[in-house]
Image 1 (cartoon, rainbow, N blue to C red):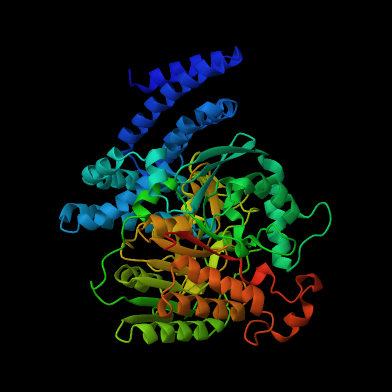
Image 2: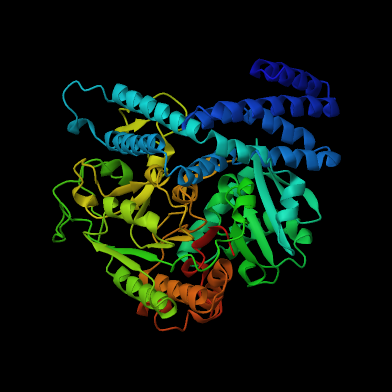
Length: 606
């Protein structure tokens, strides 16, 4: 009865009912079909790698989209529909996070630890081979076959590790989060906006402690185009006046239909989907002309609604040790063998051409970021003002290496990383979760392994990487294998750390997700790069709010952003000399969102 073939047969019956416009009966069949499929996915996941779980989950996509399309015509089915969405959306991400969290409880399991070390080694080897160009390979070397073999090895080891954590994951799985349970966990006065893309359409489930509504936001394509145009306009420091202004489009098509559900709300938790993952919600227009959503409500991102129960667990009791801080910056990208070097252009940077987008065959150079020196010093000073005896680890120059960071990071409560981030641009053929492993001859890159290789952080030695064990590139895939369960907050003060490949219902498969999966409760990431001066001022005010004034994570960020909006234009440390004169007149003395809206908070906002 619970065989996947049964689910397929019932799905077929549902589609027949749809063709006959018997939507009520179709909804019943689809509920049955997806319940069987979901149970099968939960069971099979115990012996599958993350990649295999994504593939299996994708098999439910069309059924889920049909289900959402049918129930959009059935208001009475809103609660049962959201129960299904809640169990489906982000299920792989939530499961992977629980696997990582379970590792902490297996610290005394020698065999499990060995599996973990093997998994890390294979992950690194896959990355190193994936970044090689044909010129770097031995004659007649079969790279696609090598990657297939390594991928299969990694999946076998990951399955063994998953089996060791079955008891813990089954415990979590038994606590299926229903709509009623989710509502009971929400703070008073808060609302969850859970967006979901299905087919060509977008819907939002509006969830509060005592209400649940489904709002149809119509076609996703115009909104996706408006998001791209809005981001481009923000980077230019101005909007696009007129009827085609993307800000106006997003206000009318995205926020206006939700306004009546947000009356009196002070905290908005957003679980985005599809193109909305790249939208800086705080910078959207407010109800009054010339204002922003940031001025009306506090906004936090919830990467996966299933994670809310865990995120809302009481924080660790105080008195369990002095908080510790790790700050990474002033990275020497030309470091060699752990020693700082001069900043001359390196003779070559094997493997990084694909990541940087350069196709000319010339070496790409990551430039040192001298502005991060002041950023590091300011953060250390603010931390020690509140925690005079709190341990601080500063990783700079050649010490800011991949190996040192991966060793040191798990032992800290706060991580602040001020370096280059990368995300492969759209013009580069992306790595996909599905599809065959192989070599893309035209684009000179490997396809078919994992999107976690498409984004990451650039660390010491990246300009001289030679394919060794520490190549200076920390990918999202590698971050996800770290044990960051102690980390309360990870600030990724680098460009585009909030971007990545999107997977329907699973959010962005990039750095933000990777840090969450590794165990970090709160992650600050960026949607674009902003000038060093503005970053330093905003970060200093944020940390002073958090550590000195004891504000919550979200209020610390929001107050800093509001101050930047209202006071930043006249503050001597925010703008370079020419920038102040170049700001558009329509900002009316206020600092444009380009300077303050790039940072987004994901996870525990408290």
